[in-house]
Every structure is written in structure tokens, then in C-alpha cells.
Image (tube, rainbow, N blue to C red; front, side, top):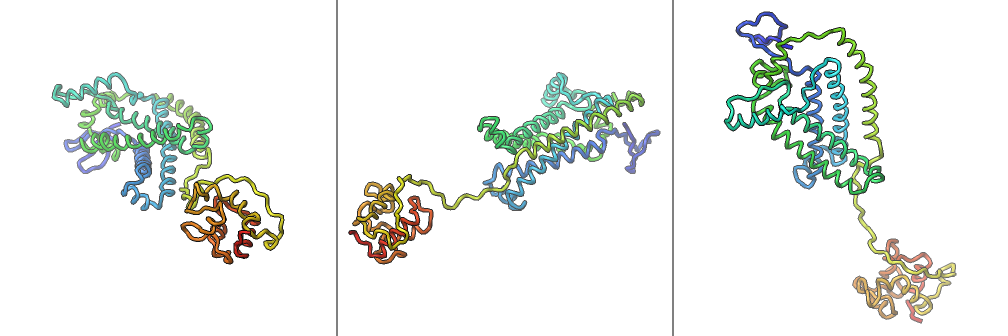
Length: 398
């Protein structure tokens, strides 16, 4: 499709071009441009929210995470952008299928051996070995390379993203090593994609010569001759389309594609809801018992009150402490410099002071530690009452 743009900037549909008019060719329709900008937006959001997680220790990343509301919000935004990109892929497949099967357009984005020749031709031209660049069709070899790199990257990101999104289910099917491998591949491919956009796309589309077709939809005839001479020749042939056949193909497409699209959208829903995945960061435990020695069970006193319990070291308290505490508090392994294997060493105490203060149960370190309820050699209620009764009686040996 071609139009003339007058010097005043208005579009018209044909007629004789005046001397001050410029011939323009439609390259991207509005639907194509909207699709492009949706992909750009979702890709940008994915890149920002993904890279700040990959390099979370960098100060800039921490500032961005804080600005966005915290790591949980960043993860939600990242996944929402991923869903938008997947839906955009479904739409893109429909647009591509419509152009090929309904409009009978050539699959000009498929790479060919001619693209390899054109790439070598351009390299020779850049090295001043050839006077002119090769004539190319609707898509140049570098545009095809960038397109298929994006497709390849999307496939890799989708596969590894599914593994990271559903790690528990994946671990039931594949070895657990696949999960850290997917994380490495996901982050590496993201970094590669961002660098490709910055180095390759930014130069060819915005710096080398600013291509406005994704904004306006049109290229001038000079731009077409420069980059798409073969497509320009095809356009000028002005091939007619049989409208009746077009309508038949269109009706068939509108029957088949909605079914395919629904199936793909169901697949995306399955992708997102396959398992309940934790997004919130779990805070680390403040107090974790690293070593809890196993001690043989001791016979619980049969007394019903603390007054009925034996109240001397030799009457049973010494044996109780030997069973419960000697693993950590003995002459060979005196944790905290406390030895509870003999009456004299028990009264001597350790680094924190006297383990037993005769006549003062609450002031004794052993009672204070046991009252916290998380000691590795935790005593039962009866056993603790036994010790309290003994301390209250003056901590006698006999």
C-alpha cells in the first residue's frame, strides 16, 4: 500500500504527485505497531524487575526494589509482565497465521541461505570491498536475526520460567538439579537479551538511521530503496487479490483460530496456577537449636507434689543430671565451663556463675535456663520440680 504525503503533512489516497509531495509506503499497520509496543513494554518491565533480582546486592538494584515497594511487589510485577508477554505471543501467532493462510503473504521472516549471502555482502561493503549493499526483501537478514533471537529467548524464558514458577511439581518429575540450572539459564538469557537490545537493536533502528515506521507505520521510497528494494519492486507490481477466495479463507480462519487461542490461553492459565508458589520472602529464624543430644529416658518420679520428691544429690538428683546434662556438661566436654557430673563441680558453677544457689531456686542459673523451655537438655515438669525442691532445701549432698 502506498500514499502520498504532501508538504503540509496530510495523507491522501492517490492522484498525481506534485513536485513537493513525498511518496510513502505502508510498512506496519496499527495492529502491528500496538503489538510491538506491548512487547516492548512487557520486555522492559521483565528486564528491570528480573535484573534487580539477579543482582540484588547491587545498591542500584536495592534502590529500585525499594522504589517499587519491596521484593514481593517486584516479583508480582515480574510475573504479571510475563503473563502479558505470553498473551501477546498468542496474539502474534494469530496475526502471523492470518497473514499467511488468509492473505497469502509470503513467510518472509523465515531465514534462507540468501540471508547468509546478504550478511557476507554487507560485511564486505562495510570493509569497502563492495560499492553497494545487497538488495533485500521485506525483512533484512539482521531483522530476521533479531526476530528469531527474540523467539528463541522467549522459548527459553518460558521453559525456565515454568520450572522456577512451579519448582515443587518439577522436582517430582525431574532431578532437583534442574531448578538451579533453570535459574542460571533464565538469568543468563535475560542478560543476553538486554545486551542484544542495547547493542544491536538500538544501533540499527535508532542510531544508524532513525526508523520511524514503528511510530508512523510508513517508510519513504528512499528508505525502501535503501533497505527493502525487493519488497518495493513487489509492491509496484500491484498484484490483485481475489476477494471471494479471501473471504472464504477469512471465514475458515475465524473458526479455527479462536479454538486454538482458547487452548493456548488455557495453557497460560495452567502455567500460572499449576501450583501454589510462595512469593513472600520467609524471614530467617532468630533462634535455632543446632545440637540437641539424645538422652536416655529417665524414670519419672512417682511423687505428686514437689514436697514428696527426694531432696538430696545422692538420693537421685546426681543421676538425673548425669542422664540429662552430662553429654554437654562433663569434665571432658564442659560447655560453658560447667561440669555437672559431681556435687562439688556442680556447686562451683561455670562462666555465667553458680548453677545452683542453695536456698534460692529463682536465682539459680539452671532454673533460669530451664524456664525458657528451649534448652537442648530440657527437663520435664517433674524433674524441674525435683531440682527446685532440692535447691529450696539448701542443695544438700546427702
